[in-house]
Length: 425
Image (cartoon, rainbow, N blue to C red):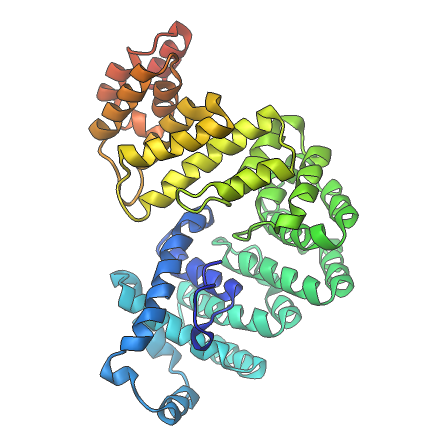
């Protein structure tokens, strides 16, 4: 997990650290789907905060009694909101450390103090965006101390547009279910019956319901797999795959992986099963270490189709993690391809093309010409069109149409070549 390396004095519970990511990144217009990749950045920032604690600046070396006294001072919420806006605009590592220190202060407050803080914020004249940001910062620590109280306080906010409340409250649901499963489920079902989770969108999907059900099913999977199956079966069939993909940022426990695979095979339409399993496999990658994916595939007794989908997704995920730190190289791609060759050789070409396409959009991105050169080299070394086809079928190629058309001409399969050229019109 993100905070597993922290010293006890700096420990921030995982749900709070991820709530921080949701607020910090969300305030910079990042989508929830991007948080999984961005959490690696947060992990490094928190790790830096740990190392910096041994070499703190003079102002950080105040006595424990002085720090305690400072932490007991009333929080000037208007001042902090202004400061947070400045931090959000600069986005530096020092600002992240300041955020962590402030979150630690909130974590040290009692639930009564947190509720008082929420009341103080409610009484101040803030823009809605600022008020939401402050409330979400307090919500994380409140969830840790009393998830039931947090849920009852904010249940009417689960349909807010940015999904920040819904995401944090789904974690509150999970925390409560771990402590008192029967009470948490009874409360949840009462809220569903009262219409709190009814869809507010034209497609009929309730994203808060999907988030909450996913979190609850994740908790039930180890303790009561049959109950997990019943809950998923009660969801509309076209909502189930997304429900199982919304396990948040937590990996399945090793001992729950086979039960998860059984749930997928029993409840998810066949066409979506491999994709659902692949989403979980991709979360097991640690940069170029795919050993946990190997174990997952063995435990779930993956079929050839499931294995291919899992290997492809995991391979691309590993390259994406590299891209958080540096521009990918041929060596990185070769290492990935070597692993793919041990598990699903037929997926190597497609995984390579997708990885190169993703590398055009990362923080340390390749230029299109660089990625194209690598794609051609791998294409020429193979006996199929998989590398070029998967590299050119996505959005990055459409942003570089002229160069992409030159590459498309190298695709030997006429049908696939015409498909790509049509997309590039």
